[in-house]
Image 1 (cartoon, rainbow, N blue to C red):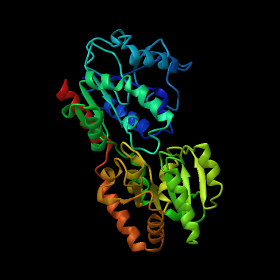
Image 2 (image 1 turned 45 degrees about the horizontal axis):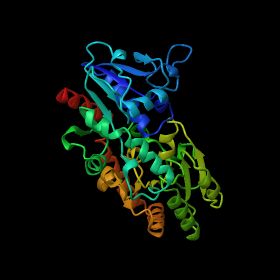
Image 3 (image 1 turned 180 degrees about the vertical axis):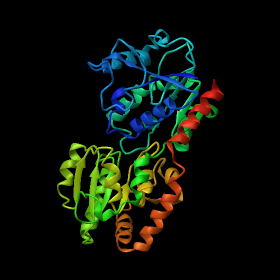
Image 4 (image 1 turned 90 degrees about the horizontal axis):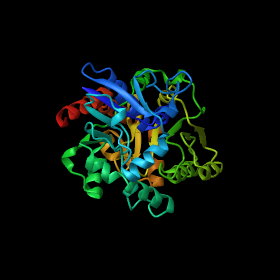
Length: 375
């Protein structure tokens, strides 16, 4: 099977988000699948002086096709006008044009498969749904996403939650949506046996790790409220935050001496930071999947997640699901985990057993099976 995969290279640069990990792992897996011939398609603007993608891109050695126009201009024209048709940039006998990310590509030469990780743009009951920024976001997605979902032969997504929201909000035919999920990188499983006492730690005290930064979408207000509650309880627990930081939250965090902001961390450092933590605290308001929760389970620590969107589905009964607004209850859970080794080990063991099913090879198999069935 010959697959041409359209990508935004910058989204794959390490360190990357969950969507970037999905792109990298699925495409590298397809490339190593015996029956698959995989090549990339992207704008020529991303090539360096050596004729390759940036060294931060794990896909830079894959064979490629490029088009001469810039990515933003080209995609804007695709989404507004359905033009230009990209057939001339696809080699003959291409079986599929596959985008492991959200986009619309006008093509008639072969069937198209896209991945819609979530449809947050069309949600109306989020805390930010009525801001002008979100309304603009919804307007832009509304100009293309329905056309993409209608014209694509198969639509991939990462959770049953996202699939059902596409059906409910956009009226997508349920039978053409395939849930492929996400996996956990082997490095998180490998470090599960490491002696925590021998690891470099961001703080000396016992700490809870937050992944995704301090942002509204990631529950920044809830995280700082928990920090305040821990201080009021005179707990020595620290909250360490890894990821992107919104300016208002950086300022607000300065009032909490038990909060440490790391900013973006490398993919090499993340397993160590998780392994050294008491638990993961993931109070995100909206996720199409939520890879950090599984990564926490893989390294052998409890995962505490909000009861929003896909997160209860992803962690099952192996995670601790909480109302992110229940600040005092969350503080109770953290203090209990810190003081009750038996309780901590129960959730850590439950998570290790549960997460074993989340492999990238399983996701790749779901992609190849669907492409064969829908061909």
